[in-house]
Amino acid sequence: MSPAESKANSKAIAAAARELEVRRKAATAAASPPAKAVSCTVRLTTREAKQLVRLRKRLASRGVAAGKGQLLRAGLLLLANLDRAELKAAIRDVIAPEANTRS
Image 1 (cartoon, rainbow, N blue to C red):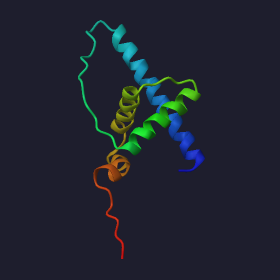
Image 2 (tube, rainbow, N blue to C red; image 1 turned 120 degrees about the horizontal axis):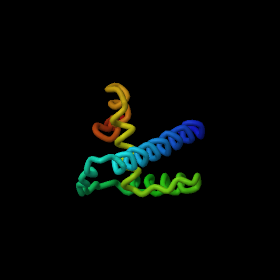
Image 3 (tube, helix red, strand yellow; image 1 turned 180 degrees about the vertical axis):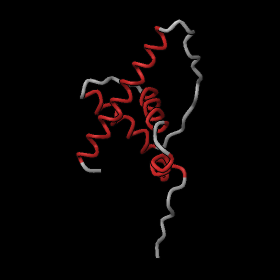
Image 4 (cartoon, one colour; image 1 turned 90 degrees about the horizontal axis):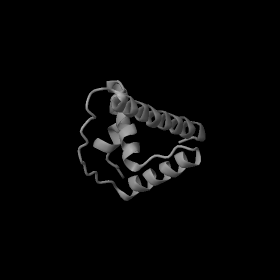
């Protein structure tokens, strides 16, 4: 990933985290009862866990404090807003990685 793409991705994730926080605060301020939280366990590979730590550090260096759960929620928010083709491209390697064909 090029530095420009990395910076753009970082900005998108930070924006999603801010949007998620704004939505939560708006929901809390509304008269309706707060959304019920559900516990969920996610298993990550070592590589994915390290990426999460690096992302948290990168955001922290830019003044955005975000926990792992917040980053996962922000990623979910971003994925939920993609059209079908973009979503398929975004998760292709996670759901159905291409087989490594060696001759």
